[in-house]
Structures are given as structure tokens and as C-alpha cells.
Length: 69
Image (cartoon, rainbow, N blue to C red; front, side, top):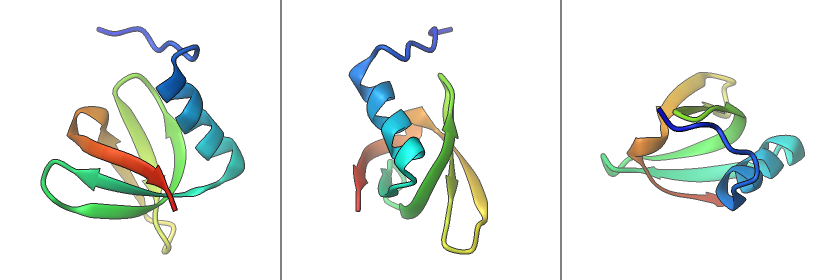
């Protein structure tokens, strides 16, 4: 199990998206693209809230890229 290290640049960037309530686009390894706001993250997953406030739990291993909109 990997420790959650908030000192890593990627984790800090996601934490900034959460703090700033930035809308992000996630591309998944399935080819799906999701858009919403990240509610929280841990060392395995993040939670994305879409335009309907539906929460989706996403495993970090399934993400191809994540970018601010």
C-alpha cells in the first residue's frame, strides 16, 4: 500500500483543484471522459461530483489524464 504523501506535486495539484472548486476533465482508460469537481482524494481514489451533484468514485489507476477546464 502506498502512503498518501501531500508533498508530491500531483497530490498538491489535486488538492488545489479541490480547494478552488475547479471544474476538471478526467479521461479514463476505458475511453470515457468525465467532467466535474473533485470532492476529495485519498491514496487510491478520488470522488468527482458532476453537474447533477452525482458522486462518482474513481480509482486513480483508471485515470489517463486530469486537467482543469
